[in-house]
Length: 269
Image (cartoon, rainbow, N blue to C red; front, side, top):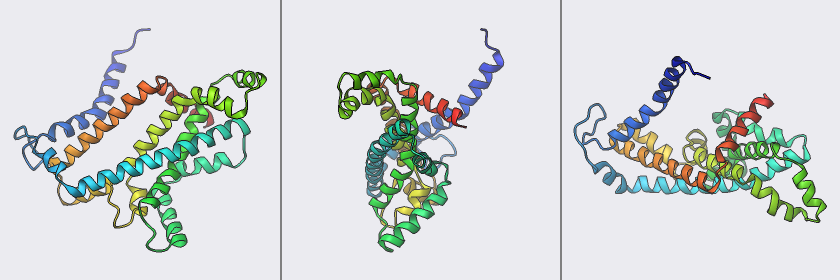
């Protein structure tokens, strides 16, 4: 089937709209000027400034720790929820799992803030509360991905395992988990990405003494936008690309799992 030139032009414009700003950010991270208005010359000074900024390094370590812990917890709990929703069809579990995804972030952030202060006191906000908050809204993404993966599988495989005498744990370890592994990796990757760049929920649940990258970048932008922010954004993009490459090597069916999520969401709608 021959595609219309208009279709190619439309696709090119969409990709240009998405990727040209990213390319500009990377280019101006090497700009010798303190302003991003014009190109002055090539330099690596902004990366040196970034690596010598103790506050920025603390914020980066906090964000990486929060994202790693939240992605790990959300992957474990979300995988369990996805399997339970698919096999046992519980009445309220899908609603409880999907609700944080449909809820506006500012409403979820305020709700969690009120909960933490009411239960643990006014000084309760810390890294732990941020991890709990991020895990809360990441579980639903993992559950949807895992459930979509299970929906496309042949149930006779699991019945055959039971007929051959496999215990529930053996069936999960030897059959279910290897089959849903690409979905688990996709859910972990999505949870990590959502957690590390979240601003609104983190703003309400982090407290004054817990800097993270989004909060730190927002503070820098309010004062002045320097190429140091561009350098940090470039490193974050490289980290994201690295994670995507690793995930596709570990789970070659990763993007197929994401397509299944889209199909599942459309069919549910």
